[in-house]
Image 1 (cartoon, rainbow, N blue to C red):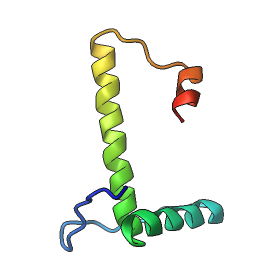
Image 2: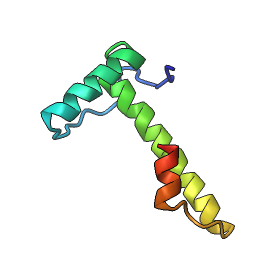
Image 3: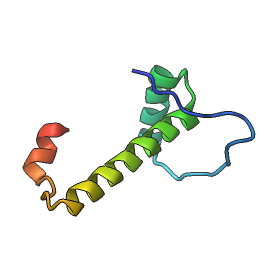
Image 4: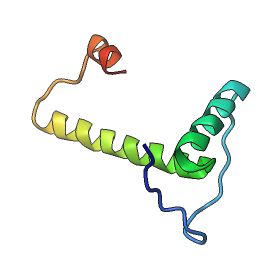
Amino acid sequence: MCYSASMRSGRTKTTSFSLDRKTLKNLKALAQRRHKGNVSALLAEIASREAKFVAAEAFFEKYGIPPLGDDALSRIE
């Protein structure tokens, strides 16, 4: 599954991250599979997904829906 990430030149900012070798290797491999090797596009996809999770958490909190417990989260993962 490949997500569309807006990665047009001039619309992005450059930053850096400190990652251990294994994490970087895994990140590059995932970017290769999902975004033709574009790690920036993969990180944009992840950030977009996390923003949706934050919105969902706010929705659940607003309507008194309890957060998922560790057991439920493990099943989902």
